[in-house]
Length: 116
Image (cartoon, rainbow, N blue to C red; front, side, top):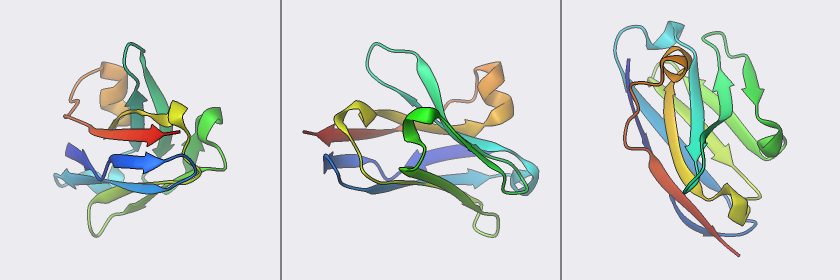
């Protein structure tokens, strides 16, 4: 499964953005997908994951603010981000959970910048 994240941008604190992750490949519907982020000079963190069956998990720092969802017909995973804060500024990536643990198959990501 090849994935491409897009939808980032510049937003003021308290604002919202929706990121999209477009996938190619025939196994998308049976693949767990995650959103990850990496702030400048910091390690890459898991933001949220969604299983093939729709079970979701979130990092504590986004619980209640971000929502991950998937549309298997469109081969797309979304990340709805609300109540954004400057500390959410990072490059956001999507990847399969499997490739996350292999630390490979990272695309370009999409930059999210939250101004105070």
